[in-house]
Image (cartoon, helix red, strand yellow):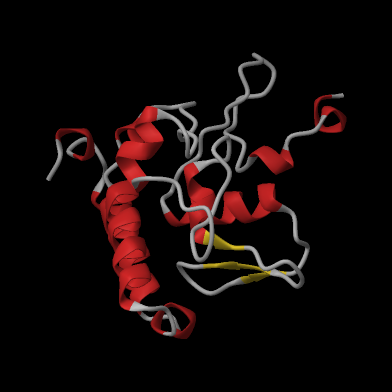
Length: 155
């Protein structure tokens, strides 16, 4: 096991392991060519052990960054896992057809609202990644997702 995962609780380690297990049980996943299945297996394995997951307030790298390329490999331009260079590395795990809902490659959940930030929050949840934290002294709880942040909640 990597050094950066040694400090995780058994619950967090188990949850990360379940992400890959869940991926391999999905019918959407099984309809992919072998090369795409191997790619997603490697991405989920790498992300499950990513060093940024153990640091509070640490956002995941982007697809085009050096850390992103180390975790997910070269950026895919077409097909499953296709993303833009400035997107979160979690975007490779969201199927985004030109029409219709987004689909999580890990669990097959359909995101009918077609809002990428919410789909990315869903993928972060598979890795128990909670990078958002309020630094104000009047508010001392972790925020579940970036999409739940709003000025109205502060006022």
